[in-house]
Length: 211
Image 1 (cartoon, rainbow, N blue to C red):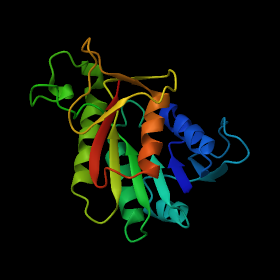
Image 2: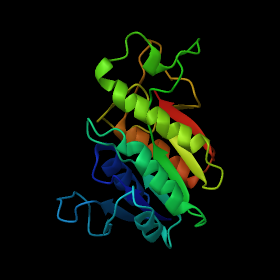
Image 3: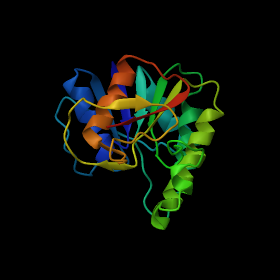
């Protein structure tokens, strides 16, 4: 497939690009700053653009099969996430290009109850702004009926690690292991995302991945 990735130099985005390249896809990595150093091989096309700008989105989606966004705003600028979501949806409307979104975990419900992770007593206060922004982001997608989107929520703990390819999938409930821990590596999250890209199973829906 021809795949465009926004947020390509981020922690998750760079792993998404690496996974897509390893699977033989043709990848365009979108950077806001074309002078910014990047780790991508020469086979990856580098483009400049901003997910908040519908015209940039439409231009970079032209001729592509799939657009992936793994953007994450800097602390204090969480409101940019909703702006970027609106830019992506506006830019992709009418193009027929599918959208895969790396979102947040805060809106997942805890096992055995309707309380979300973000509303749980132990949720770190410092993470509430980005969790709330991701919740608004998901709401915008859930209301979208024209663009073919899929939203992937990671487990509660998302960190660099190993690519195992061994994880479980869920929908709106947080996945936890036998010890009650909810985690997945960034590498395996990229695997889950590219699996969905190649074998769509959650169109216009949210899903999650974890060990």
